[in-house]
Amino acid sequence: DRDFESKINILTLEELIALKLEVSSRLLNGKFYGFPIWKTSNLIFKDSLIKFALSSTKTHKEAANLLGLTIQELKIFIRKYKVNESLE
Image 1 (cartoon, rainbow, N blue to C red):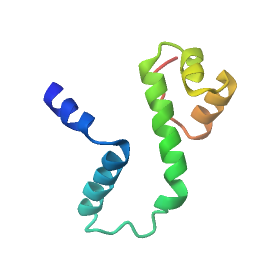
Image 2: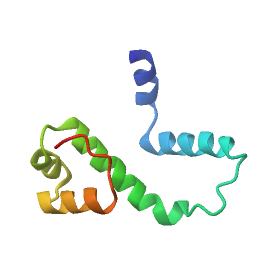
Image 3: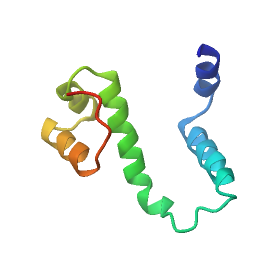
């Protein structure tokens, strides 16, 4: 809903990520033990960029252009990391 979106829009990306981690941590009783957050953060961020690009464009070519990737690089990332692809 628009009210929720406007509240989220106030937060910086860093604040939003920290909030998501905090809420997730509460669900796990404050324990992320065994999950390499630092080492996987780069892939998590790239995954979110790919998902954004795929959902906000109509084609893989447009998504690749948005991200500054070649279409081959985009498709390799999608296959390698099994990004939930909504476009054909």
